[in-house]
Image 1: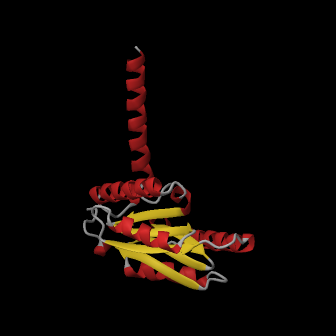
Image 2: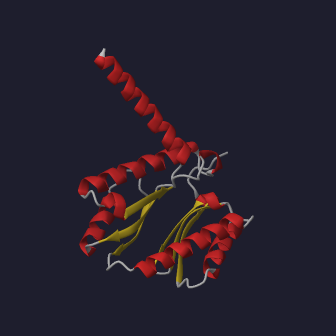
Image 3: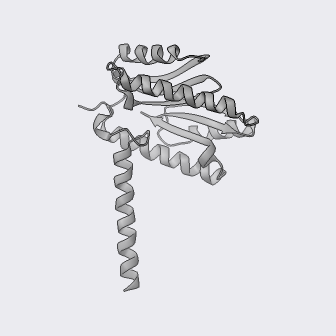
Length: 197
């Protein structure tokens, strides 16, 4: 009887885990599989690669779960976050390149400095302002973009439906007050290996 309850619980957890992955998409809440221009197979491949890399990072050092953010888009891995040691940044890049199916790795991880509340608040404000601008701009599909800000530098990752949309996203980012640099890693739908029909 106990083994039967355990088995049912295990199956329930397994299926609820699958539902969470498919409904959240690659960038987390807010992105739906239905709105993602990548094929379902590519989305699954990217999700598996991201989970694989995240697990290997956690095995290497549990603090990486909170300090390092990974995103996989059409086999391209994007790394952001803050770590203590410059050598660890190189090791994380190596680990990312060892992921099966990887096409490229972009490492935007920075080395930690003393916590600066004023700077962190400013970065959060910049991110919020850009997210709001993208949502209200009718020419941009805001759910296709992930935004990170560090020391007034905006990092934008995502999929653009057209070159005009890509330019519009970058223009919106440059209009935000106090932004020093915009680093955009935006892939055009036409550049994806396999596109949704």
